[in-house]
Length: 231
Image (cartoon, rainbow, N blue to C red; front, top):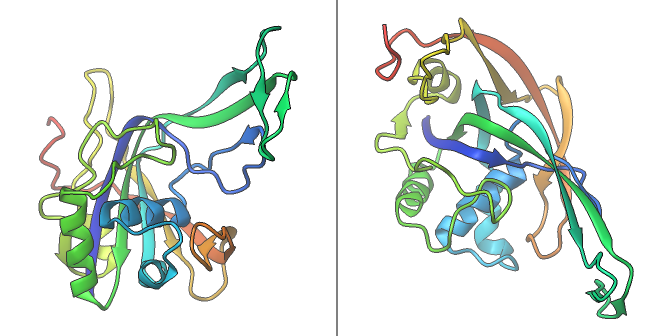
């Protein structure tokens, strides 16, 4: 079964699952809804278009934590000066300032794998990631990737687990950094075991309805054949 790989590397990433109003959280790894949204942007799928989005939701996803990143918080304000006026969600104006705490992952690198029996769908996504219809971001519009999400040989003829176990380390090593002996990998669980996540799209992104899926995590050995890690 073929697997498509995505490289998600950037100074800031945010993959929220439970964000509400002024509090914007982030998970410790890319959410499925976030990755599907990224692919939809590459393919030019409108947020109200469920027909073209639905096939993407059937892909089985795995995430390898090549560099977990550091959880950080960005403190933001809007309209807090005495002379400011803020337009609220209902269209009315308010003199009350808005304070927002937005959490994100700093300096993270994830290798995402998407598995499907339909190779033609993966080929279409792979081509779109190289020449996306709309700009791609890592969870939020302002969080742009520092490296290409598209991987030249990212479409592999192999099962998800095997591909993630064997693919080279994508995190560019620093002079002071020692490559880890193991890498954390998360897979979708088919037997209902693992951690429950509410990031499975059930409708278009305009409707914002999400269902559950189970994710289990385990450690795998650091890939032996790695071209971008110094000996």
